[in-house]
Image 1 (cartoon, helix red, strand yellow):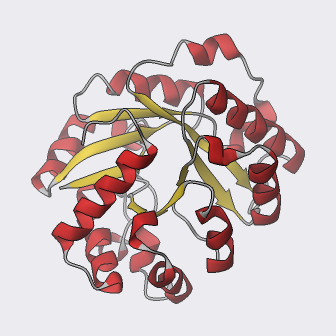
Image 2 (image 1 turned 60 degrees about the vertical axis):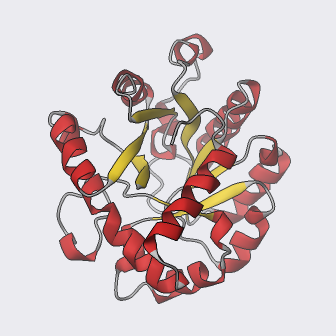
Length: 254
């Protein structure tokens, strides 16, 4: 019934027991998983996990890793297997500046161009970097590939700009937090055909397990909150999200 569009089963906190985690999720009707890379090694693991029928891989570099990164096209090309469905998570993160703004922007552009070269959508991470992010997205014509704004945290004004660029907006655990009223207001205004959901496990647990390690089995709690906000039943919501994902990711079987 549900697809976790962003999960790090390749994270050391989940990888050792990924099969158990997947089985627990399936008991909660979470049946498909997009495992997302954040550097070359985690991207390799994502590809390895995608031999499982229900797992797809997304390969890329988190902006935190930009300072120590040198793009080696041959190494990334080796990962481009049939179940790699996107490039990500890529983007900009100015919250703690683990990498300089300049290196983040350079790497972001490199991966957008790589995605376009391979005709793959992109999965974007953005935190406190919206102006630069939008400028780069526009300059690089991201609408040629489209993608997902992962765990979207921007304003509705930002969403309106990106909505015209063939992107979905994915919501995660914070949509369930009591103090997330601004985020819920954005969700209320967004049309259903622009929405996706995710856990970002092991990060961003929903309210019921806040402070603990997240996993895909908790995706239904996020879906429930979205169904309440959008005043739509869960079955219809699930069907709409699947249709949205098929529009962006051409080679998925869901």
